Image (cartoon, rainbow, N blue to C red):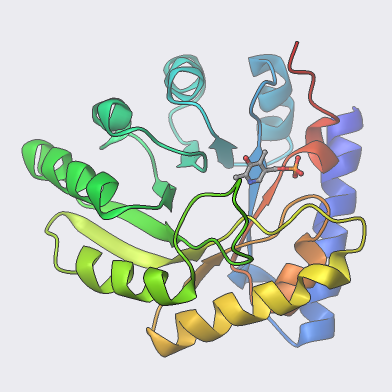
Length: 222
Ligand SMILES: *Cc1c(COP(=O)(O)O)cnc(C)c1O
């Protein structure tokens, strides 16, 4: 019951942010980030209409895929190791976290083998944090150029994980620079915004928001 209520709140917040920014609500996809959460909770969200789910570990993702409805669009949003690529290519709807050319080449190779096109976003380390993946804005641009030459891949846009902050306004500048970069490169999708800052992200142009704890509650990693 709580998940349904939470979804209602998040959806209303998304709509309000779209209104403030003069954007269409249909242009923003809510990706429900279900990592560490059991299948029953995902099914509660599914029954409330959610079809886009985000996970950050390959093993967990594949396990959930195998036991949940086939019309779910799975989003890989976490750091991906090249040796795990083969398990998800052809099965996920989008890989958000493509952060190196090496990883992109592996996805390309696997895509050709399976005769599929993989939709990705390129991850940018927008605030230059040591703990985060992806290159700087300048490196990101170079990476997009290199990746766009690879077969079997479609770069839909850019992705970032903004710094953790108590005040979402702190991240507005980062969302804005990612949007500028996407415009410059004529890329449409912007995967940015999490529980703490998705409304600001939408105001700055997010098309995919990755919201976990505001829907499913706090995570317990023990
Ligand atoms: C966990 C995670 C999220 C969701 O985080 P919340 O703060 O719980 O909304 C979004 N993006 C990535 C990459 C994540 O790993």
